[in-house]
Amino acid sequence: DADGRCTYLNRAWYDFTGQSETGGTDLDRLGAVHPYDRGWASDVFLRANTAQQAFRLEYRLRHRDGSDRWAIDAASPRFDADGTFLGHIGSVIDIHERREAENALRLSEERYRTLFETIEVGFCIIEMLFDGDRAADYRFLEANPAFERQTGLTDVVGRSARSLVPGLEQFWFDRYGEVARTGAAARFENGSAAMGRWFDVH
Image (tube, rainbow, N blue to C red):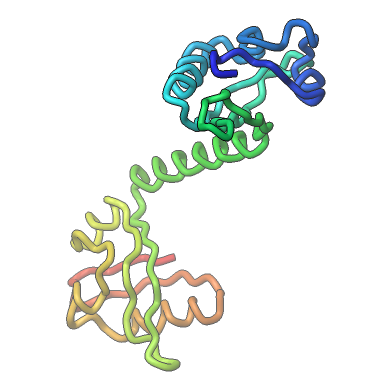
């Protein structure tokens, strides 16, 4: 209602939280919210109620089995025909699987980035640029510090091989182009006079 008291919760709320119908309304419903989230979630709700504005937040909600599950709590303000603020109407949606998947992906990306930045092997991701069937150039999308140390090339991301090494031999474009076209991995050793280095490439 307009004072921030909860006047109705549906059966799904009671089934999810295990709260009783006598104890789930009013601010007692916050007892189902994880203790670490309860304070700030309450503050967000009360500020939205005072401002008569919509709100949306994500917090951990205690399931009746004792587990804590991530949920979205979102609500919009209600007004009568005269524009008088009546309170909010909203919903709480279980998003635990999605949130856990996002966390797992974030951790995986962090591990990849740590490995990418610290591995002693030069590593790069390139995009092949073709002129018809001919491999004309390639653009660097990512490169780790070891790649820059081992090739002598710096600030390569977003730049093409020909712009970085104007006299680079056609061999490199043809070889990488073949891998891109066929999807077959390759490992070889080859020298580049333009770069003044030999490389073991995989």
